[in-house]
Length: 194
Ligand code: ZN
Image 1 (spheres, protein in one colour):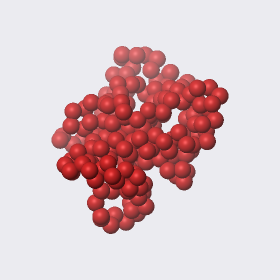
Image 2 (cartoon, rainbow, N blue to C red):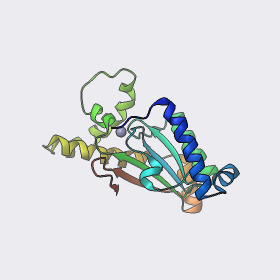
Image 3 (cartoon, rainbow, N blue to C red):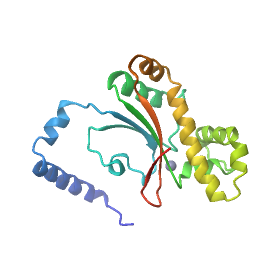
């Protein structure tokens, strides 16, 4: 993989600014006017899974929250703040929880390793495994079990999103937001709607 140097980033930024201005004169003027995204995207911090690029959307279209293994815990002030702001103030119509194949966080949670501060975080996925252990343990092929845990983790995190007070209240009064579970296949680039 070709690696970008630190200095190149600022060169890239200059090129990007110029490109944007030539293709759309009003681009930055519109950005400065504010944001009105319809989507809240909750995904993994993994560098291979870019929210906007794989969805083919422009700046201003998606409100984004990323953490290791796209986990939503109701004691996580950061995630709860993002969901509350997106639903109550930005009035997003869709909340997406997007997991991905070959997720290092999910892989780590499947192994009995001591990962320091990550232990209590990955505990959330170990709980998903425990909830679905019958189904998962019945899958003999380890790669298939790993892929299935990625999907089950997305489903469980969708439930955690739906259980938040702001989502329940807003959904009852407006019919929105709708909650969706996705998996991004790193091997092929395909986005799968669960
Ligand atoms: Zn990941």
